[in-house]
Amino acid sequence: MKSGFLGLVLVFMSGCVSLNSVSLTSVPLERSQKVRAEAERFIFMGFNFDNDYVNLVTTELKTQCPNGTVSGLLTKAESINYFLYIFWKSRITATGYCVPGKMASGSEPPRKRRPTDDGSDETRVTPTSLEPDIQ
Amino acid sequence: MSILCIALTSGCAVLHSVQIGEIESSTQLESVPFEIKVSQFGVDLNDVKATGRILMDKKGSDQANDVLTAIQYFQMGPHTGAGVYSISYVDHLESKVRAQCPSGRITGLMSIRETAEYPVVKGEIVKIKGFCLKSKRENL
Amino acid sequence: MMNRKVLVSFLGWSVLLLANCTYSVHQVPLSDFKPYAPGNSGKPIEARAKQFAILGFASETNYVDGAYQRLQAQCINGIVTGIAAKSYSEHGFFSWTNHIHMQGQCIQR
Image 1 (cartoon, rainbow over the protein chains, first blue to last red):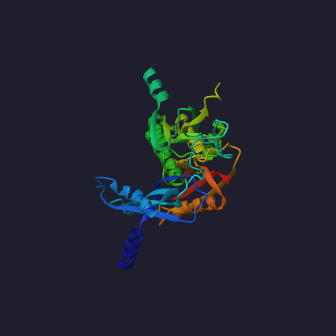
Image 2 (image 1 turned 135 degrees about the vertical axis):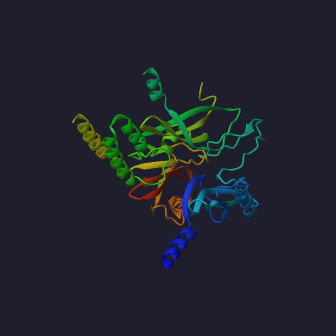
Image 3 (image 1 turned 120 degrees about the horizontal axis):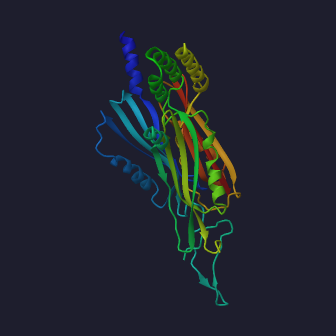
């Protein structure tokens, strides 16, 4: 009886994880530097008065990638139920890559127009990208 | 009778999730909206039970409820809307998005998961809306 | 007698039509489509992962990360863009299987 109860307690303490939502962005070419951030909140009886803890994820990612672009992000929102949703935890996890310097989409930064010898403006056209010229 | 018909045909729309992506616009490009809507019908067994209670006598409806409850034991799990019997309706959505915009300049994507609720039968809908950026010269 | 016939036919049709595996699509998140490229310029890639749970007992959701990694592994020297990931559950007898199916495009540089 005691061991059965203890087993049940251990099962519940491990938590049942369920996935609430997923979001993702496109994956960059440069994937050498991984970044990861997590924020969680323990909730009792549904008493949760704000969701400001999720802002910590973005702040942490920016700290890990100070001079670059965080891209290839996979964001998960999970619920971990410890006991009948009386005690449960909400967790946000974001993993991605830090692409230093260059724009993470792989396209070059927009080039300014510069005059050529014949007086006309030359505009550089990137062969594979169809992004419009930004003036 | 007419009120019943109106109630049966109108349905309720239930929104489950929305996701909005980045939106790009330019004075030199025109944003042409597009929409992709895919759906599949699902059956709510609780509605079937309630309908059975109305249409049948007590003994019959109890027996029907027992059968339907046994079926529900085989359909347990997280539900967003009603369960559907085929998952292929959400296949290749990104190909359908690209087909709407062959140039590939797609922006302002919005993904909506919703349910159109009618008695017993539910419509499980996934809608993708977005904009295709086209140069104004292309439209001449 | 008529009631019994109606009941039997109702039960029979219910079992035939409804006693199949059901699925529930939870979300279809989409990534951006940058860098902009024509639809036929890249290679379509996809990755799937699943997690079986009895009565919801699951200790983690790493199957999603695994699918994302496998998708990237198919595009080592390229950019993975236009990713549509459908998250759905396949229902069963006091158990279910959570699925994630990612489809995208690999644009080589």
